[in-house]
Length: 632
Ligand code: C2E
Ligand code: MG
Ligand code: MG
View 1 (spheres, protein in one colour):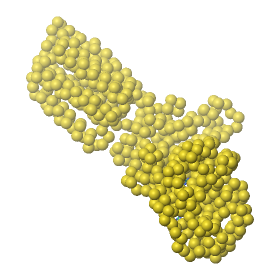
View 2: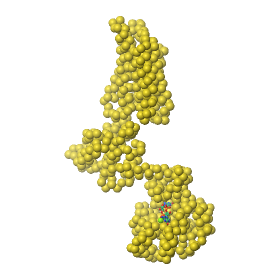
View 3: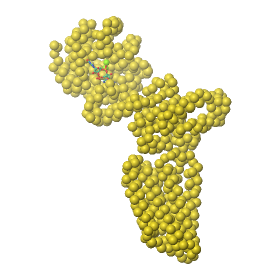
View 4: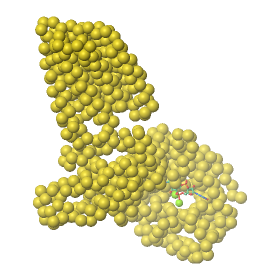
């Protein structure tokens, strides 16, 4: 009786089953599909061996029984091939509708094939004292054909859906299919070589080692699930349209008296083991000092969070001597995420933008915060596209000199265009570009464009004496800022006194030394500076004294309060007095009416800027404006 290969196969699968059953596992779709394949595979090889045993003992058994065993084995082959289809479809199709379509065709083929296997005749060949045993006939042919069709469909799916499966997974699955098809083909042409059973076992073993080993989902040090596992699990829940809650524990701080490394590790293990005991908690180690807890609903999450926060008030380890003070970031409802992979970005955004976390060590992420993250991200894309495709333009707003009674300068104001061709105003994107550092590149482009405009349009021929260019704080604080500006002016042949750079008070906070050194280099070169946004924020007059500026720009909000509020008049009068005392000029911004213009002029303000003269306009329109400008 030749059942050695089957016995080897059974042994292999029992080993796999033992390992798989004893490991900590995440309830993933593919894991369930694998377990099903493993169990059907095992039953199939057992049936294979059993059919040989019953054939060899045919004379003692009824023919009906022997044939029924053989046919059941054949049916199990078809079911096994169907399990493989199920496994692969689970991996490829995340949407239920698509999955059903792909799987149900194969199911129909399998059901018909099994019916034919049981109805049609089977013949048994048993010679040489049971060493040459095989079955043949329509029943056998049908089993082979159906299994082969399923396996070939699988192979085609793997090749066709290439883009949705990771290459390593795809390779392992293709290898698995090839082993099965190869074993089936060999056995089909050489009936007496019973390879199919062993091939099945080998295929499942490869699947286990390469794809389903639960170890890949575990963090070695702590035994918690890892980041890969979290991503896979969240994706699965989201594909099933299930909401979940997350709690991120950031364990940055621990306090303890002089204790050994060993005691510290023991305290850590105690903490991890405690987390396992909190009802409904699934814990994932996502980074060195971060543990993400996942809950299938908000109520369990809140209860879990309460239990954990309470327990963390006490210490861990021997004599409870190790204290850990985690930050807690709580996302009650995953529905605020457009895609589960956005979670990392959302947490990063929350951490960067919340004072609450610093103050209380606890932060709850709501829809508003998530929407803000998405808006910022969309805006980053708009800025990135604008830089890549040169969708950046500079508008100019004329500035009137009350001493010369004409337009003598202008402020350069950036505009970018989005995919729909709409102009995006700077209030919407400058802060985003400042935050992510793109403002450095953007600032260089703007400055280059201004220099190019001065070279090509020659605004000096229409009485323009200088152009004001806005600077962001991060530009001024860049080590090479002055050098880069000078290089641009030289490249376009722009005289330095044609440039006035607008900085804000915030430039004086932070990297003050670098800012001042950049300013000094540029002033030595011949460039002048203005202090923008005066009258907003803290408006500390000390900054004016410290900063080597020639002009102070009164913000529109300050001008508006001057006209609306009696007391504000005195504030502005005093500021004006001091600024003039320092021998600096003033620009009044946001002047919209003739009345406002007249008042500012009578106060002795040197420069006036606002819609009263013109809104910021494109290059060509600006040139036409200054060319045709006549005082009314
Ligand atoms: P800002 O430098 O104080 O510029 C003045 C803003 O007030 C401009 O808005 C201008 O269009 C607006 N404005 C001028 N006159 C009037 C008026 O009479 N009424 C009203 N309602 N508004 C008036 P804009 O162009 O939207 O720029 C907003 C801010 O964005 C600027 O404030 C500046 O802080 C920043 N920004 C603009 N361009 C640049 C740039 O090239 N680089 C940097 N770093 N920031 C820029
Ligand atoms: Mg400005
Ligand atoms: Mg301003």
